[in-house]
Image (cartoon, rainbow, N blue to C red):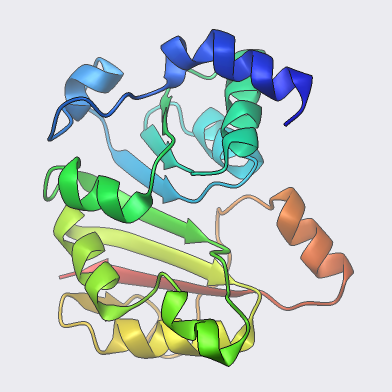
Length: 208
């Protein structure tokens, strides 16, 4: 963790951070308004999340990340860019979804570049599994969007298979199977992946 990231955690958590003391969270009280709400799971260093929130001040963004340097970096970006429509949770995403977020509270969930666990014996650790997908569906409003992406082709195939089998979801791009990047910002991670010649697969599914 850099000094700037540590300072951001120490000084800016009170402005953007969410302490999980009570359940479920009151999102209207948390943001001080009622607006479309987007959850990003595993925002990494936070550059893409900060860019999305800055581009869409009419929406509220909730970010979950367990990597404390990434949390500190996002807090620093939010303060530097004077972004006010983001709140940050440093905890396990599955626990937050299961215990702290109300059902049908979200308009969109983003899961960008989750850990691919590339070794076959570790595939069971991948977050995109049927129980997780069902949990996400419960937290989305009807018509809500679940946007995923990965730069591992076999993980993209697994994501597609799991979501196709989920009764709560419909593929927003049934003809092409995979979606375009759309308005999703390019993160530093994705720019590096592109430079290294790795393809990125996006998927968008809707709760029906």
